[in-house]
Length: 107
Image 1 (cartoon, helix red, strand yellow):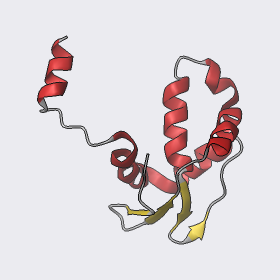
Image 2 (tube, helix red, strand yellow):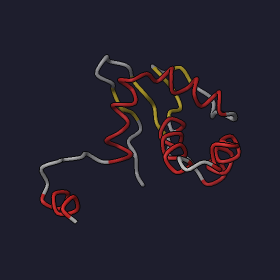
Image 3 (spheres, one colour):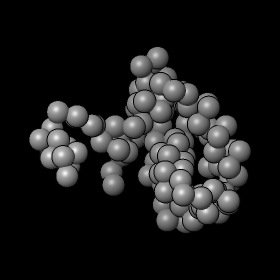
Image 4 (cartoon, rainbow, N blue to C red):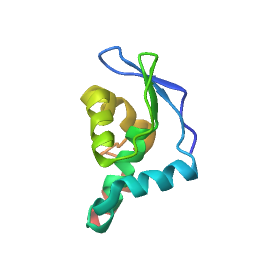
């Protein structure tokens, strides 16, 4: 996956981004701890990966979180508008009117 170096939020915040490397992903899985044994493990890890791709907010560097609480803190620092700016990068733009999605819903 290729991600842009920066993204601007609706509020004008600049988020610097970097793709998470395999070693950092293993650290993130370790940080997840008990979250990895729940039914929502995949969703948690995907969301955390998106959040942890942020390396700076408005030019101020942020460290890669090493605990679940640090992941939450970074998510809160990024904020709702930051998450909204990151979602299309990591999950693509959803178009509910697309023929493929309508067909998937029918099946």
